[in-house]
Image (cartoon, rainbow over all chains, first blue to last red; front, top):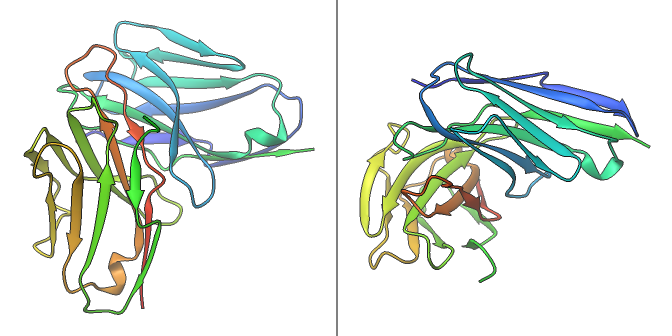
Length: 112
Length: 115
């Protein structure tokens, strides 16, 4: 059974800092991996998709890396802004691409 | 197409009542998923459909829960005889299954409160 762990569970930093969110998963036989953002009381917004054959993916100030063999992914956020405050969720797809499994997320707060 | 749509956004019901939620996926997506999320936790998988076929159900989906996708388009999730423990956010997602760039897109969710 796939288990996803995200560290840290919560993070508060001043505006402008670069930061790294970590994700580990127990079953390396994944299809793809997505990073999502969730604002309080809202649905999930897909930030980045890393296909299983890829090592990293970039979108604006976000960069995500994937190391399948070690069961790890990281999300790098450059020059953080207060609007980045949200919960970030890591979600690997199972090997048959039938579902994605979530960790509990990292709750990020960017102080102005 | 404006993405995955869920209705209603909020539902308050009395314990023991039945409730039904609707999800309209992105039109060209053949796969549809239901998840449940409680406060402070990540979403938990409930079930998924490929077209109209329900291919997998989680053990979280008790006998009081039933999901349908009758024509391979919209889906409904019904909870019978609601309990306070059913209070949660119910999320729907869709994807185009089988592609190497399979990506899930979520709706805004339905917040259920059982009183």
